[in-house]
Image 1 (cartoon, rainbow, N blue to C red):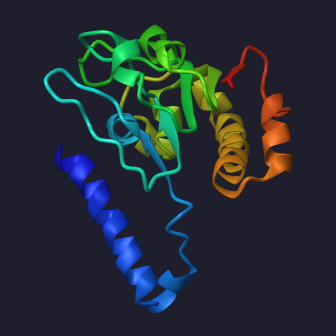
Image 2: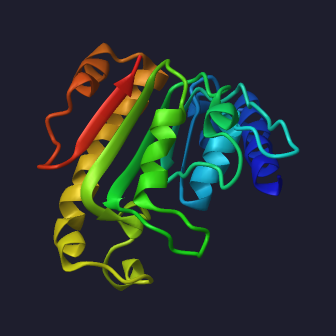
Length: 203
């Protein structure tokens, strides 16, 4: 709950600083805001998009236009379809075939891939990178990405994976926040994917 409220606080501050033309905040676009998060940040992202929880109906922050969830997972209990049925805005989920549990909550690559299957239709997309693991999507490189055991193939592909993610997520933001038709067209069938990578869309 605190993490969800923190996001709303940040949005309030963006609006206030934009309205006051404080420093460079007048360049911000409060009506074109996306939210992305990795791992627990993916939980926060899904929560701000409208996910329900046991005993809590959740929130739906309408000032957010689009979402990217890196390494999300289906709820530990209850129906994933019911938990996600209010996620009506654009959402891209990203995971890898080796994106497994890192904190002992039972997450598996299959549970992470199952998020997309449980999402309602309407501007949803799903990227699964072959041999990418949980730390592939954390943004670190070198020793900072070695906090969990990793396979050599994942290390070898990390730079390539990062490049794929950068291209696809940039097009996602351009398409969903700026109504960029060229970016939208590229997302129909991304050309940067590697062998074994999976791209799916729900319109």
